[in-house]
Amino acid sequence: MEPNLRMRADGTFTIVHFTDLHWQNGEKGDLRTRRLMADVLEAEKPDFVALTGDLIFGSRCRDPAESLRQAMAAVEQAGVPWAAVFGNHDDEGALGRAELMDVLRERPRCLSLSGPSDVDGIGNFALTLTNSRGMASHSLVFLDSGGRSSEDSLPGYDWIRPSQIEWYRRISRERADRNRGAALPSLLFFHIPFPEFEQVWKTQACYGTRNEKPACPPVNSGLYAALLERGGTLGVFCGHDHTNDYWGELGGIRLCYGRATGFQGYGKIGFPRGARVIRLQEGKAGFETWVRLENGSTIRKPKLHRPRRWP
Image 1 (cartoon, rainbow, N blue to C red):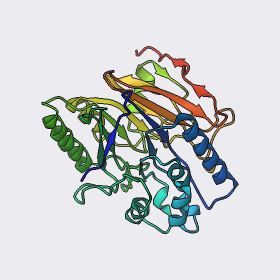
Image 2: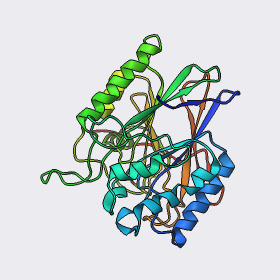
Image 3: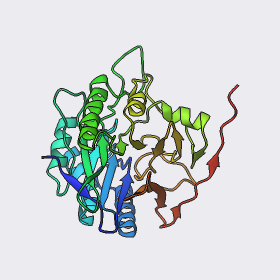
Image 4: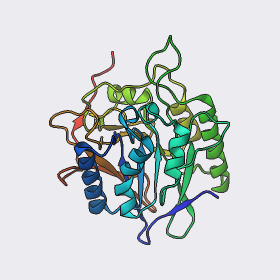
């Protein structure tokens, strides 16, 4: 049975979005990551935690399973439900994605699922959020965005595959059918940004910081088009690019970077680690979002970027 989440009695639901922990073996940088996570969770007191990949730096872990358990310790200690998908670095060590998912599934309050066996990837699943009266209000969709491209002529990162997009369309239709034909408002979480993250920066007003060109796949496989066609998607959340945290709206969908959390991955001086926070409110369209940083401060009014006029 699909696990459900429920809004608070006051109609709010708060999600903390961690990304790119890059946990290794419990070194000094890892412990700093854990402190940051614990501080964010204590400050925000979320109802749910979403983690979008590169949980561990697989190739640098002596025991990837133990590293993954260590990486999740702060979330487990917070006592809230959580779910995670993998990035391009998690399975570079001794364990593959399926084995790492088995480790996640053993952890308390983990809602991650391997997903259908006939769909590409490990970690394609959807969770239902109900309102304070127990009625379905939102869908939280997680996708496995893969690792590296397997096509020699198309080097770079992987892309969301057709079977995943068709699976998304199917669950979107099923949930709409149960919602009197109306698309259920949805949030999507995965690791590698799709090409529209570059497009939104070039064509729309965006809020936040871009310190690096989005490392998108070389193939646009059509996920964004499917989201537009199905309707109901409020926001898409990814990680991967550690020194970006901007968001912008394209076709009514807010495309949002998280804020890199881990101290074992690359970063940039003057761009501190942190986490994105997302708040849904019963009866209100859309969502609020802000960034909380290692020092406890928040960014609620990120700087505005206006694109150059298209020729």
